[in-house]
Length: 419
Image (cartoon, rainbow, N blue to C red; front, side, top):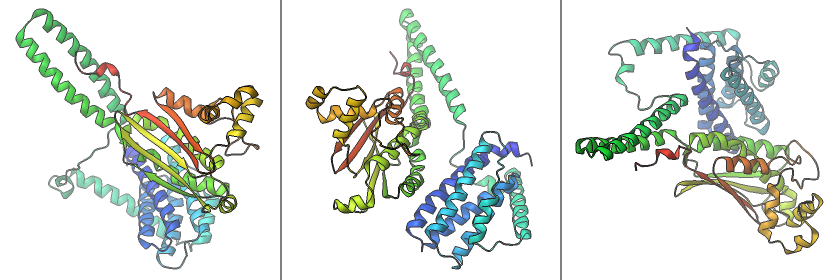
């Protein structure tokens, strides 16, 4: 089989299965006795293993095979879902993501997974090597059979018409560039029709104008994707940061179905990661502090998205300690951004703005999470580069909310309706 021919399909479907495994592992951690979740994870891992084996990505196949063994023991009641088991499976998932990313970048997807395989092996009784070889061969044969079915006239595969197709984003961009050329020619035709006062030509240009407006709406809808595509990354990110900081965090995601321009989605991910890390590290207190202040030990972090007019709003809100404005003002004075006299007359909203200044940080110690003064200034620059805006509201002891306003689309304004 020519693997290059199916590489794009492999990458798309692998990423879908990896996301499914990630989401279901997080759900399983909260509901360890739910067998349906284990079955879903097993199916995704099994499918990914079969695809990897058929594409000759042996390390991916080997690692997913060991994950299957662990999941099989859980399904059979021989292994209890514990935090250690989830951590091990999460680490294996990260290894799979790295290998798939390597394939996407032109690599061969190889990685030294011996230690991961060994760790998974301690959780499960490994099956005989012959079992894996038989399953890999079966997966390869299944891929061939599926391919032959699609080529066979009158087969069931041909009778079922798919409602969706995978289209490269480059093709959509190319189509939009061609449409821009059409809009320019539409304008020229309108000018010519007006100068010649030719009724038939005027009727034709009006019809072209109407059709092109319909095309514009369809093209714009093709660019729109749900913010879920970027929001899906965050549950695992929050879990990892919370474990590193010994904090308890409950993440709520609202409005994941809200649609946004694909270009904006691609660009906004890193900015949201900065804000989430900031909320967990600087905003939400440790369980001990929260308990002493009469709060639940687990902090709440809410990620919300919604439409309003021609904009999309994304909010990151926590129920933490809020911005320590006294500390922010003191740091601003130390950095020469503010005089002591001016600090006395500043409103709370003015003090809050200093956290967006380059190099500004109130962290006492530099860690892997924060303290280097790189973050919120980058967030603001990124959002403003997209034609958006960011604001912050904070109440001491109650928490903070960062609100991002973004345009729904970044299309060329020259597309606007005909003159």
